[in-house]
Image 1: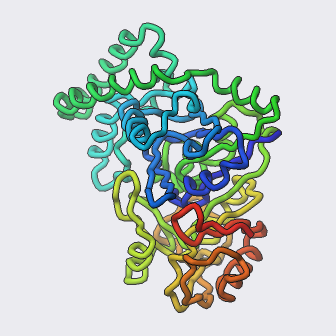
Image 2 (image 1 turned 135 degrees about the vertical axis):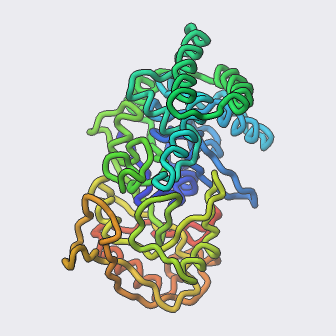
Image 3 (image 1 turned 90 degrees about the vertical axis):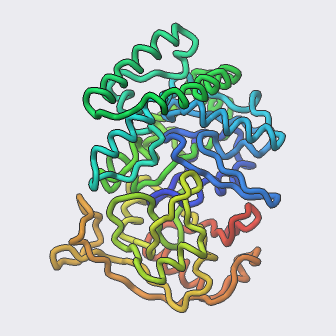
Length: 422
């Protein structure tokens, strides 16, 4: 058996949660391998919208095992809110959700450091979600982090020592007023720790590899998107983890030869949240139309997303980096009302055309477009590929010819039923 990986190919918000929910019936174990609660995976079914931040998107399917892997960073207070909201809906996850002992914890002072660091950057800020994720990963790499397994061994002593170091930074380096906020954060945070104690804390790398040996099928769910990868994204406007398929190896403890299919998810257009370069961004009425029709506002933060045309230069790069074997196109229905649809096929940099993704995206990168006919027809009621408008079929064929990877699923609405397998 192999571990299949499902991840975003753009700047996040591609619709990964919905696709995991749709694919879950084919898998025994659903895992998250990186990222923190800045992820907001939205699932919609039975006329109810569910937003998950830390928990894998397979939890709404019965008899499935869900694992939060070692590469994830967990905020206990946010985790508790998620668990409480799911309990109200009748989902008790204590028997089906496993948490890696090696997953790192986001401390209350990590959130304060996040705010202090972003404020210190002024106009150069990266647009952090201020959830403390960057500082938590920084402590992990600096070998100063606290892990889930630490809650079982001298935890208060370890916690107090780390918080003291953070307070020294907040006071003496950032001159940041933290006291009132810290008190509020800590109460909810320690309640969250007690919630985590109620779950099955495991050596997730051993557990997952044993599941593979037993012939169980496993899918690894990524958070954010390829263009936010700490190594290969639009640095420094990136997240703090490896969002690419290789991150599944380090974030779960599986060997590279255990990777099977790689599902790459992309929108029929592009969006981005926060600061950073975005070559195909539209600052006009068309961009606003994409935002309004696509409801492009962050599921975690509520922030309006920046919108633009599909960028094939970035998409080809993401496919290459991840070894994508199948493509999944989301939000095709958002394009229903457009007479023409533009696609960026090249960048012009210093007067030269290129299809290669550059070392750095900056103002000198000019997108070069091709235009295709829009379908001018509603897609949300379509249930079979044979009913696609010709222009949509042409759009899909055009993309497959450019990307050299098959588009196997097309989403025509937010509900799990509005997903067409080709």
